[in-house]
Length: 397
Image 1 (cartoon, rainbow, N blue to C red):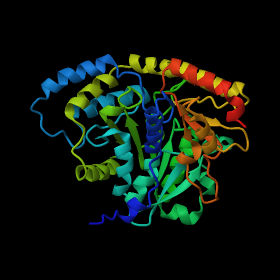
Image 2: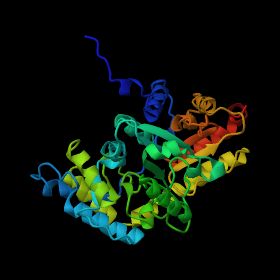
Image 3: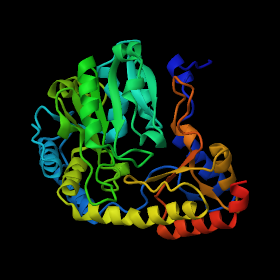
């Protein structure tokens, strides 16, 4: 019999990173060895202390059954301790913290707790696709806020029409920025929270990259600027190279957390408790996180320096694990990414327009940009940079 997908599924474009995986697969099937900057999946090993703790936890939890819907008390307690050390925040693990199956699941499902049909979610563009796609699945409407180099990759709240703001329920913010690598100043957080409170909008921070920074001062959390009407999402994926482990958490306003918990208890059964145990070991150790930052720094400097040497704008990121590279004026990002796929170069990146949506003013803030995830080895990045230099005349034609 014919199978018909629901309208919300039929309307979705292909998920950008699934398309990239297909491109990598085609190059490999043709006998090439592509250097994959496309998907932000760390290739560095999960720290040994985390893996060792998992091994012992599996035996300890041999008869543990289903995990807690909201995270074990031990895990939420470890999160609370980390939040206090890292940000000076005192959070109640019973009411202000709940576990997630990585941040993607949480971000996608969060709007289901707060949107009625037709209500609006304010989404940064470029930004993480689940902000908008979770909105659509919840029956809401995404409204895209362009993030540009000229405005330091901060959304222009004054440009949001009153009729949009009146219908909005959630404002997504992501700092350190993915894919831009930008940081938000304190003054922006203060203003954004005040703006949201005046309109009854939840201010929600995606802080998955909060520990991956390159300057002397660690980035601050949105929760340092207020708790009422404020929520933040965190993930172990990039901080501790635990992408496949699927563990993260949400923290903030206890009323919002209670609503989100109600959503999640009807959707999933939580992350396995032995994975939470391993995450506790990761949260209690900062040495591996400092090493992680130093792992990415030379990669960032080498790739950003190569584009700078070739006459491109200096786009060295302040944080996160991406280079959001501006191309020379008039060069189409998709065309450039396709040229990199030539077997003689075999470099995979993400065209900026794939990570951005056309805003109300007709702009796509990803136009003219490409994203490189700094996940290949340093040697692979050297090879990629050499190939880009050798073929620069054709690439930038």
